[in-house]
Image 1 (cartoon, rainbow, N blue to C red):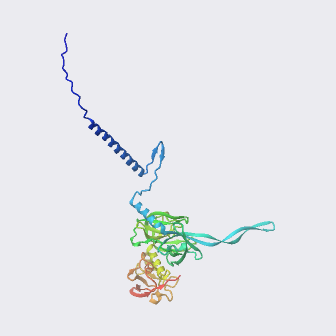
Image 2: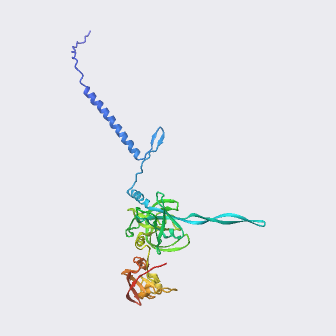
Image 3: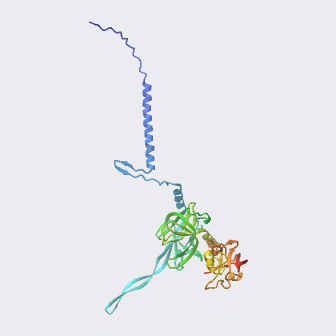
Length: 409
């Protein structure tokens, strides 16, 4: 039989365990990883909350409330402009003592006849519009048609619902503008007034106003749709008014917005909302702020709104009108009265020697055209200023000096 060989195995002497360092490093790694994972979890959770994503707990959705974060720079500008300017936009409310009627009955033989009897008067709201502060001492700019009732009392309502009695200082005889004054107003914040020359078609504008006379400081946003428009506006009392050189916008303007500001993204007022088209959608109109600046300054200095006056009737020439009238030029203002006197008696125009049939080509070097009417040029001057006219008379150009008068209603 075969026998297995013998193996001599030497036993090693036991030595102390030296692997504790590796175990400690391993445990520290686990602890660090857990800490990093927890920190990552908290950070991820906070980002989810900031993003407004609902968090689900046991099949129950919990909405996380947070401050709104604007999505674009333009959106942020609109928000900033509204926050900055809304406190300076006011509601203008008209009140009047109106008769109160009660129904009574009288008997005439076999018939009972109903009738209305007046039982005194009651103070009632008869109108509402918008205005905005243009001076620290409480001057308010609004539309003339908002404060057209001379027998009404007017109250200005601020955004914090404080009410102030207000007095109409002046109604513009030419533009749909009026200046009011808050009684007791002091240290108020006026809106900044811009420049119409900086307006461009397509730029963003904001309207703020008392929409429908009920929704105070309603905000709407749109663009400038057109410039230099001329329209004939009709009021609720069927009166009409010709408005020239005004701004067209698609910004939503409703009844009650009249007199409110049209503001650019720099926070500057560029127009005063005044009219809307009932035939189309998104067609509104605003008076240029440049026209209002003149009225505001006049009220501050002389206490009224005054316009220059020449005292003549005319038609603006263009190619079609010139051909129909057999005129020698296709621009300028043809002095003609048709059925009325072309030159009003004792007027500045008569004193300057202007005659029917004259064509006024320029005023102080500014050309008279269809887009730059004589009325528009005259409105740049003040009463009693002296101006020079370039006139075409019988085919010859002559120059006349005229001292403007003061226009009166």
